[in-house]
Length: 148
Picture (cartoon, rainbow, N blue to C red):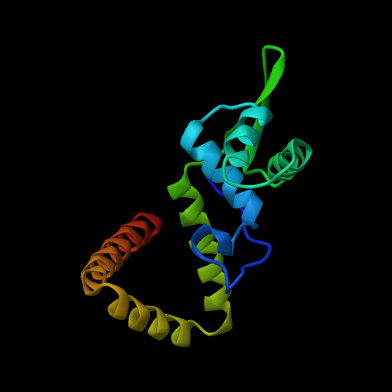
């Protein structure tokens, strides 16, 4: 599945808030937690912790549908909203789009910075990265052998 999720990336944001607006993030979290729900159910969930109008929630849901992150389907007498992808799939798509942008600036600098950040954050991830690199090399090597 290919998602195009980032038109802007907010460096000051936290987690998924870097790729989504605050209310968009809250709505997506509600959808990921609850599955197929009505706009009113999303509103009721959000209204527990924030002062927001039903019309605002419906407008943001409409925007998320337009962005391709949410599906709107007729469910009886109301519409049901559901996420197009899981939370993890969304996070993967955001990471890939952001990294593509960073690597377009300078592949060598981005690679070195990525490894440094990964080492500072979780040394065990370096081993995982090494295995992923070897696996990708084997895949590419196999692809090249079948082409020639």
